[in-house]
Length: 447
Image (cartoon, rainbow, N blue to C red; front, side, top):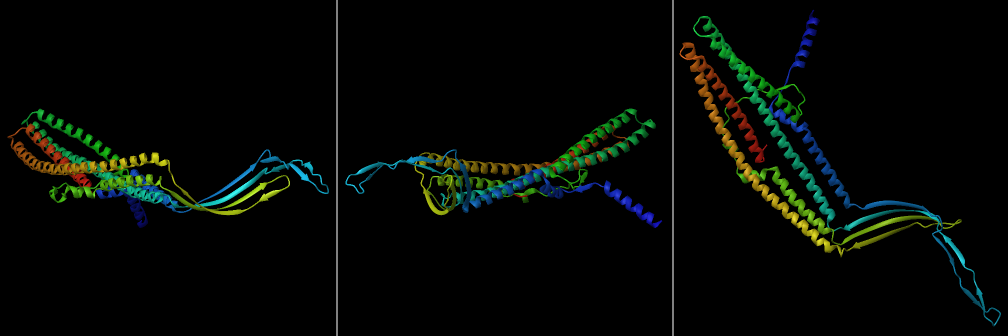
């Protein structure tokens, strides 16, 4: 009996855990998004790609080693000619000189062969292009990291926005449930009044219409919650598709004055500012690399050659040998067009500087606007809080008047609607303040 009870308890515990919903807080949603968001995963891969490019650029410091092999066979001898010996003059044993015409000697050489060599070339000076190329690769790694940070901030901002939209809708759903219960109690009172002949059935109709209105509002809110949950699930790549969010406290926040910082400080803290500086540095390095293309180039090298030739039908030749060499290349005519190419790079530098300055000015406007929106959102929240207090008091008075028979059902229902509207306004203002606060923090380089 005891074993049966333990087995049943274990089965019920498993069933309860299987049906329980996962509850996420805002911080947990953002933490999961940072690890699993597909856009951020690609940004992390972009960092790895930039690091590999940097490693590739570093290999340019080392010698370039190549091995080659060439084999050939000709349809005829590469050297195929007659060697003319001319006329031979002799006066042996005779005072008279004798001329003898010698026949030509046919020469046939090299019908085929194999040539192999290994060559190592070490650049001594390449116009600083190798150094600049490595510096550019390092800037690419830094830029990839900054772009990943920017994407992470944007994803976290999106997650926070969707999270607070769900909070707002759930608070509206709670309010609709509360109003529905109040309306049910009012309906009971109206039914009793109609049965006693104190009021007409028209009041019953008003209550039913109000109930239908609340039911319609619940459907819209539930659909909104499903939609935002689906978006949050995809954006944050949450493990559980069936989840709920933590019950957030919507108490009045403190004044946002402690969030304020000077605009220039906010600009300096932004990731975008660092990225703009890198773009200017990259443009400057591109100019220096272009200049390096028109500077003298110096290389040294060493090689080893293994030739093997088929000299003729009966003989072969093989002569292994090594060699070292140095070479200096000085471009001369290239400078005619090179000056224009360098000027173009200088222009691109100035374009990058102008874009940086223009974006910094736009950031200043953006930060000021973000702060204005935070301050305005807080003022709207104060107004909404006061409206709730007035709406609660109005509903309480109308309920007392209705019980005393000194007001109509219409006035009571209107008071209930005013409370609903003011509560919804407060919830929306609270969420709007949270979203605007997040935007201001991000615009000033704070996460």
